Image (tube, rainbow, N blue to C red; front, side, top):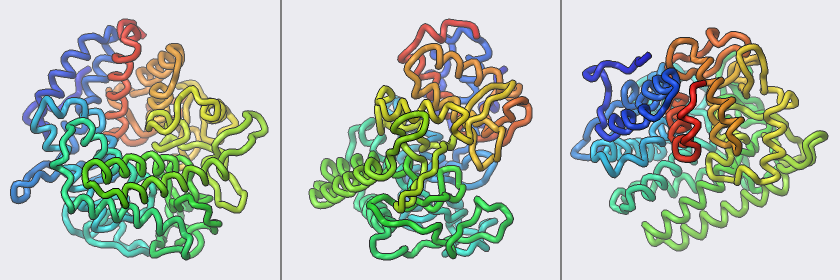
Length: 443
């Protein structure tokens, strides 16, 4: 069933996106799967975009869905699957250019914030015990937020092959990202950031007087919150640090090729090397059942947390983000652990199986994790398993959700979660490119 808004009620129109949907949906034999793709692929453009020009400069604000705020992470993920189409549609290119303008401006406002308001106003979280600004919706420090900004900038550069967008103002934001990462290595004290929230929800606030549990500096970056917006237990969050390694190498290339700043390029590369060495020295450990695997979080004192969370970056998502090959032995060991009942947030029930998150407590499987499992899988049977799960758990809404009960997909959270819809669209595109015969089947 097609559930897109009518043409006049869509937030943004792209002829390239509409033509792409028409072409690819026609190749999908399974009508239900085809309709899911038609609904999900354009959902960000249809429902979440606020685009305009300020003095001739494009500006794009993208809400996450049912929350009227823009997350740096989500907004990148929501448009990532449109990048291959920007050279066919000037308006779409301007939209992503405008989003980067907005994201990099947001970084300059507060590099520690994860989510922003469209205009300066009071947030529902204005009472948080941290340095809130009127442009900030929420100020949870998450390493991945800044990584996603770099990911989009780098992807935009590589797709358009055009340096003109990369102004000196953008460079100020990139420099601030480096500065923030270094401050949160905590080699010279705990830094300027702290956070507290008056709440009974333990994962929504921070121990240690707002600085998190103690860490022993080892070169990794402290992330007080996870990409789920939940507080870390051990603040050296492994998947986010590996994402930072990837992002810093991309930023080094930007500094070198676009800004001709060799010093900054070398600095970014050196920081990436330092973080990567620390991860492999401190966060790779022997598991009782799975051999050498990545821990999810560590503290530098030798304590490690073995789990995974559905939100990306996750350990499961590392190949998707281009961090490690999906046939790497260390990753495969880690993957076996993640997709087993030894991972406390892997759930299996009547409706299916997959990874959840402390964010939605126990027994709830996230569509993001099922999609990522398919995106990082290396055999057709596993991809088919994931497609069937996605098809059978949309609960007649014809969209992806945040999570669903492992025994009842009609018991779900967040009916309007654009990130999950975008990622589903990206999965179908990847399957069409890599396993086109799979789309010729009825599931």
